[in-house]
Image (cartoon, rainbow, N blue to C red; front, side, top):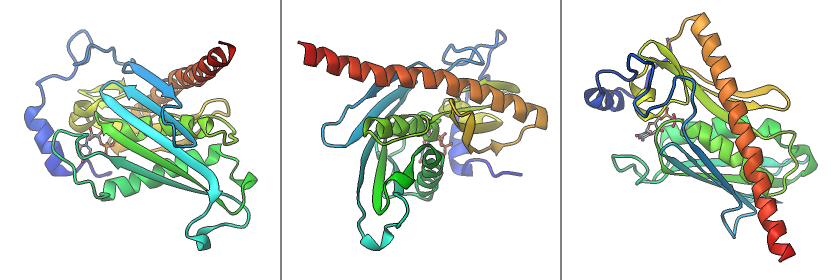
Length: 258
Ligand code: UDP
């Protein structure tokens, strides 16, 4: 059986956990329905110095992504003769969670950096840029559950903003089981006190899944339902991603026309 969150963090949450996470009318603690995403605000091109950037607020999550590249690889021996090397760093700011987090990379951040890189790589034409690197930095400024997914959604936009040729955007969202109900887009307390969490990333236009993980336990039927719920969440996020990309260029056009 998959291992649940680190026991200490889970116990802390369970001590503070309200008796019910979902009320008798199927409403969640933050007033959402079971299949509802948190409010999402996305902005593209928020940093002047990076080649591409994006920022997301998804519920209480606040996440910034920046991209540099394609550029010369340092150290040089890491260069690949036939493709760009994609590198990714997911990092949580010390002030992003209620207990100060060490700024040094934790095991969890190293793992998330790897799975996020693997979720984004299929969307990029890395073969167009041999001997170069594309570097992605994801900074979680405030965390409230589902940061790997929100990080992927944001980093994909930062890649597009950097003008890197892509097969599709990648949108990511988790579904899971809380108090016996299947729910979309778990917030922190639902993630930790709930029964299961299934993060999923999708290239919606190509209908290809690039990340699928599961923490907790579900029956096969519940797993299928959770996957479908997460796919639906990704499609909703995809529409918001496209809107955010377009609004950047509308703003640029308006500035040029003035
Ligand atoms: N979290 C925390 N302290 C940590 C790491 C995580 O409080 O050192 C919280 C944070 O809100 C995060 C949530 O736990 O979003 C769930 O973490 P998980 O490892 O499941 O990743 P995520 O759901 O953010 O992708």
